[in-house]
Image 1 (cartoon, rainbow, N blue to C red):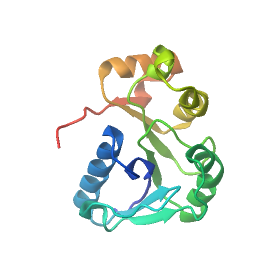
Image 2: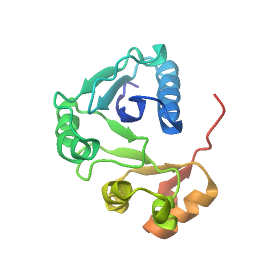
Image 3: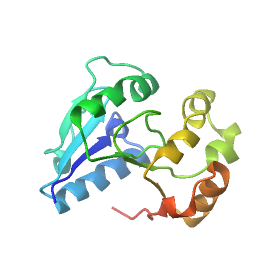
Length: 171
């Protein structure tokens, strides 16, 4: 089956964190396992260079290099509407508040709510306020442990059947 998958590629920008490594390896493996899929990598800045596993992904970068939150909620919904993916994946605990395409979001934990004092104020303002809305709108929520799953169900009021544990694996 030919699918058109849209992916938030912003975790691939700059020096890679754990989320960036997760994003690159996950979608590199998905592309290798599904050669007939079209993959669209969305970003607020140029996504060059990328590892060979992602070479066939179509990069769709914003012409305006905007702040990530503004891009995510104001520009990306229009980009998604134009590119018409069958499904989008947002691997970094944030997604557009309004998007016509069905989407999956990965939320690693509920620390924005349980340990808010450990997060920068900007993250609390930009992600914590939108996260309950986008998590409820998501077709599915991926998390990395049973404990995080229970926290997300309890704190965000998500239906248990919507939250799936996909354990992180060694590269």
